[in-house]
Length: 177
Image 1 (spheres, rainbow, N blue to C red):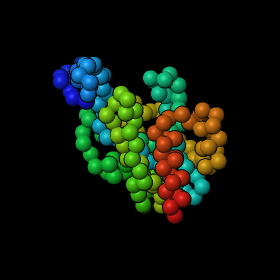
Image 2: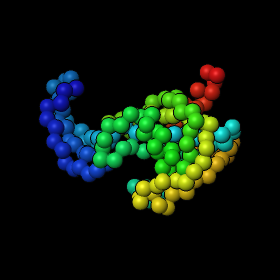
Image 3: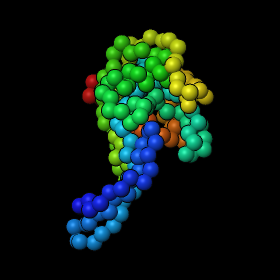
């Protein structure tokens, strides 16, 4: 598929939206709306059999959701994913990892967005105060066992695709030993 034209239709500090005119292999033309967001980092804080999640109100779906700490750099900046992971972990939970290991890669919604992200496993954790952004003031955090995490996912209480994908990556990581 060839991009014939591209125009930005919206932008803010977190994302841009563009509309691309494309030509398919058979010569027909079409359009794609694409959401561009910077690479994110998602962190799985683990202490033994416990995982720490954060819960916050997610405006697009209109409800509070449990998920792993994650985020992007302000103003769509390009930041090293490992640095971003450490920052997001401390910002959202107050935790600092003695060990942070990249365990995988995810694409958010490849049918409509270019955003991708890296999944990190944080261990050897020490606690401190969270340093949340103003927009995260209603966030809370809690520890859950892996059995509780799986039960919550089964009930739809954890429905964030990045958190569910990250949990699968964690399972694969653990199987490798």
